[in-house]
Image 1 (cartoon, one colour):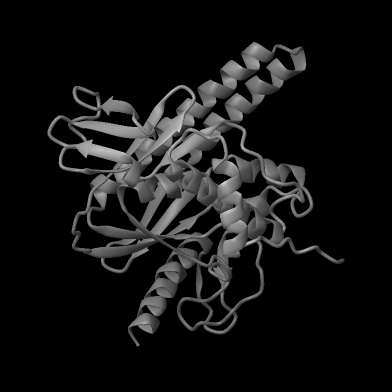
Image 2 (cartoon, rainbow, N blue to C red):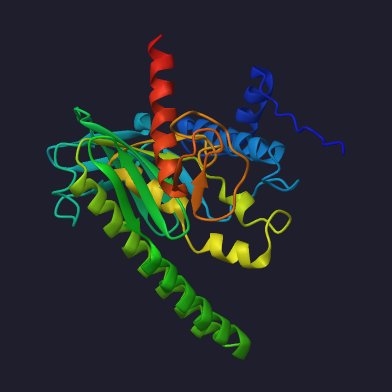
Length: 319
């Protein structure tokens, strides 16, 4: 099967022509035009990578909601008065203040990163630099019912995700009833309620990680959930079960408040942590090594292998 490889014009002549066309009869500052071009190139390049991996369709990407990224060169920031002045047009400005805002105490001492202008609001990102002394590294295996971690000094750690599974199952049934009756408002209400409760569960889980394991690097598997819920690669029941656990959302939320790393998930459940023998794919919860006769829970085997892979990667970089 032949695949057409899309090409992207990257030469300076095309960019210059595009910039001149966009600036024609536009009253906005020229930095906005440059920001639009950079954002468009970023979107197209991201789509191209996903398309070549088979994760995106052969349809040009479209922006559903308008937005504009404001560079630091278009902003004048006054940290004493806690205001940002954004240049829209020559001689026309937009002033934003975060004084007395609900998040003011959280960003005290931080610096402004960028501003994203939407149709109904403005999103301001803040950033801070903090030196953290890493005390431990924990490898985590992400499975359907749990997160299983391992650290030689601590031992095995088990985080139960079954309450999240139960929550998903309950709302799947409620949404199915609403969909069967054709009540769209009720379906959307259940969907919003499910989304909020899942987000609350993940936030509490991430807060627990930070409180129980300070100054820790959490190593997760770089899971591709697109393949796990694909109709071509998984059956209906298996797709539903994989969909119920939002591993990517959990990993992303933990990465926002703690140090994280990722490893390739291939062979983590098949390699023997004692002798390194690569076993064939096995069914069941118990891993059995035919070389050294090791028998251990598959999740524990994966968590040990994850931290071993991370250690080998760091040793290779030092060399």
